[in-house]
Image 1 (spheres, rainbow, N blue to C red):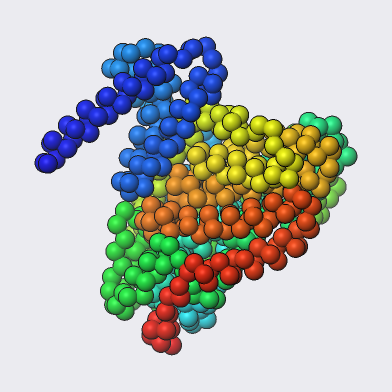
Image 2 (cartoon, rainbow, N blue to C red):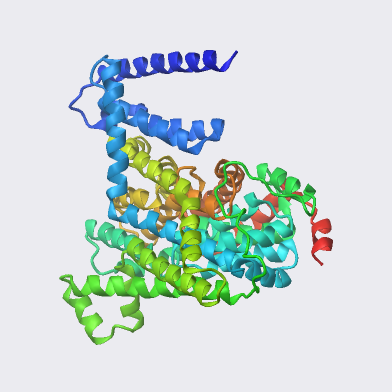
Length: 578
């Protein structure tokens, strides 16, 4: 079958399917709530996007079609297919523009572009190579390299986006030299992004988390607790976050892999020492080389990256500080006026900060510092430095497109009522001990389908806390376990989802094909999630202490990896390194 016939067949089948879809929708009452009106069809937009992404490996096309299907559903009022298609296309454009106009989204895209420019400048100045060489001397075996990546991921604890964009480019040359696959690097980077930021007591996540917790407990009449206090009590029960971090260490030390990751590691190990790594459909900075003859210095990387990290923390604080002083909470205003640099003052300021603006400001400052260094050290002229900075931004453009389409899909999913439908069918009468596990699974499903942990937490927390409080007749410990289930389930689903922004940024930061990253990571994430449910949330639902659940989970992960996995030999790579 030639290409014209194949294209014609696809078009004909698509029109038939759209006609059937419009026929189905047109029989439902137009004035009903969308989650009721569409029913199981609410799952169609995310399912189409996810299934097509796995089949075609074309992320942009898959997301585009997913958004279009959602808009088509919203525009379907009769059997006039042509009119519905035109309106859906017009609404799709409006949806993308709306996402781009959102201040938070615009800030994220701009900071990604600027960080891309900083990385390219660092690379041209030789800082990235010098830093990679310095790390390679210490992380001189694949085991150490994976553990070193894990430690760096823990150090960039304050934001998951910054984690993906900083750790990936730094460690990629080291992992490539030691024949560790891009897929394994992307997994380690992704698994130390949201799972770390989600439990860090100082991060861009904690403001949303504690506000949702506080509102949830107020809704059941509990006013003698603080959102931060409950947040701290949920940390031991954040089983998926903790287990996935420990799983990285177990896998790195034992060298055992399973599923598609094993095949990816075997391919990487079989690569010849001087063989060029070609990763299709993987945006990154592989083709960028240091300026010829430049003296390699780690400071050409440390100073701009340090400026980015320190600048981000300062910007977080200043953003929250000014927000509090401009607000109406007199207690917080008094705290900022009397003890702005106390632990509570710093914590409250970071909790109230606008992460997207703060990261943009830090990335802009780091860009200026990198340009000044490149010109001051006479490595680049001012024209060349700005040109390279812009060139680094161009590398990130495809990531911006993917993020916009992912956010647009999230907006459409919200309009068709996917999350409400899932909550409705899964929150029926159930025994109390299964509630934490059910909340975790429900959070994972919503987060996987929508690609957002923040949105999932916002949707599920107001439902989960009253449900847990009711079925346990006011048991605070049980409600805390269920609260943990919301936060952790949202992160698990976000971690697996191919339409999640952090998953996309992890692929970009490590120059790994996005779908390859998703396919290799999802097996590990699901394995750890199963352990978290069976040996974490189910026993915790019966009142088993968290430390008993934790020990059982770690032991089971170790045994499970040895049973399911196979050791991928690193001996050759270690000999080459040494």
